[in-house]
Image (cartoon, rainbow, N blue to C red; front, side):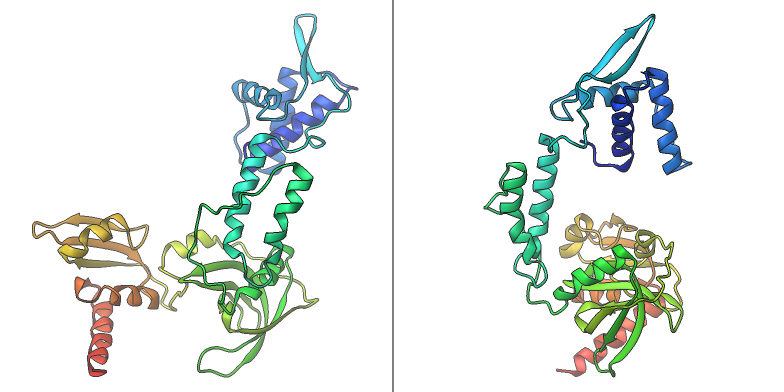
Length: 334
């Protein structure tokens, strides 16, 4: 079964029409019902046409779909559609083959958290799903993620996720590195993992900052409050597109960063871009010229320093100066 929201809405709308034995739904009326449901959900969405409805009915009838007993009953020159079984509904039917495979893959991905605090339930799902739906989760793993189950913030992932999902305000005791612990009322919006650490972004009500960033491993305690949750309409994908990592400097301006990577490093960077904005070309020397359009931040500096002598910063000048100062301080350590 298609997993996007539009497809689910279409199938459920058709299911209601086919289940309604008090009315005859002709083909054009089915299109109208489906489009009304789609437009109620999203007024800007494009409605379906004849071909899409035919494909939907075909899918619902198929074994990989819902195996639905949809009949086309002739009435004069036209035909109306309904289920051949009054008791049938796609919402009463067990999972089909396609849904089972999607669910199994989802559980396989969830297993990345195996052994982590608060995620013991993942290991309990195999027997439950086997009993309820008649399939087994593969015992042999076929995918591995770079995950540290000893990470101190793992036990905070689930309560923070639940707070975002249920729109709950949190009272958090937070202890930054090398600073005093403090308490804040926090409206969580988004969870992000970077460099094997988890971060939550949300509204710091006291400072009125809606992109406040907390590392989960620095949270000392967390509890839900009865405060009214303030929602936000930030496009987090767009927000993170302009940076590497999670830190957004106050000046907040996108710049063009030009770099030259050594011949030895060139192919690696060309096949594994530093950022989605990366544009690269090989020079006659075999070196790689790279241009990035992003907001320079701490994570970018750490990434560039990790390449050592294999990268040269051309611009901007202030980034070049900061890296130079860091390298000078590094040399003084030896």
